[in-house]
Image (cartoon, rainbow, N blue to C red):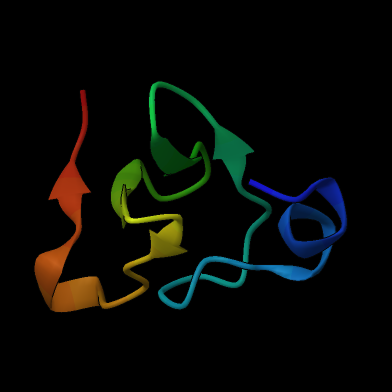
Length: 52
């Protein structure tokens, strides 16, 4: 994923910053994982996975 894109993206649920990890974007603030499919981040809260 492009570093510039990662810098401007924010978690749609809490507006927190995102971290790239294993082909997914992780929000450490609200503990959601957003999948990346075909280099496109799926930034839908309903499709995000809750992480521990």
